[in-house]
Image (cartoon, rainbow, N blue to C red):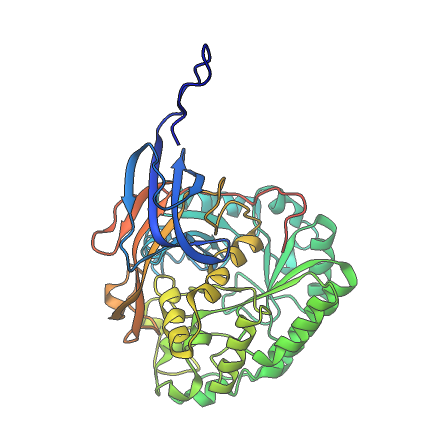
Length: 465
């Protein structure tokens, strides 16, 4: 790539050395794994060239033969919980866990922090809490709650990536849900300001009120039937269809809602949907009594439902797989399914857990990767993340797909050693994570650099869903 002297009397200066070239026998480029060398200048991918092409670079490294070079993963569903409930997680611990899991960008949910991110002032408090303490890039969702409807444009202009709402009680008093008329008002408002509404979709009319339930998982599962998801999603689809709003269904657990979502997409409704590693890796029949580390809302359902979710991933109806990392302190995970906190901690290990199940099902790595990279990047409006291509940020993950290790929650970077993935014999290992062309974490050495940035919503006309 060095420019030589041109014709007589014309000397073209050679460009400055590249900062880095990473060579890999398998790199995920344009949807396929192939040999390539990725050239980095000034924190971005400058070129993708043949794996053996000479490149003048400050650093020239080769990825081990058995490993795969991936773009950094993007996780748009993370509860960091700081400030206010920092004992549950926090920016320092969450972003270290992300880096060790190959995740280079996260978008933080507007709850369960105190204050919730429902005002510009609360957003600034959260940014101040995170500044200088993040190991990966961090953006922020805003919240849509009854008291701020009609004034979402201020938060949107301040840089949030969109607005999260609940259609059923959220579990924390400071983030109330929207009833049916309020949900419609929120949909109309995001359509007007061309924002994005992301929805925890469960209809409270179908949820069963309860206090203590005891230790049997099936008793908890019965309190959150599939009709709750289907009813709420139908309401979201109807609102988006009639207003043209951009909407996104969070953490889909009920595969029975997929035909409705698929039909809406076919009709041009601007809707996307995610599912989560715990819905793809686990099924209700194997959850032990009292094991409330598996409690989440909506809940993990049966094996046939899991099969149908996988089908939705593979046929593209499900656009992305994100963690819904929602940790708590260990004392809140009582052995009673009614009183335990509902949330699963999995930011560091979600990709490995899904890959483990994919191997069991004969699903190729290439089929999974869009759901962890380009899918969530598109939701957030990022054109320069989730891909290995000129102009993209030089965010990389080096992955050993054949590695195997039992997950030990105490060994994760999450603040609290409680995770449904603890004890899972997980396949794959993220051996290196790079941010803007700098190595920031390794499997052996841990996180070596805290150099993430706080990022705002990209302003991109025509950004895809």
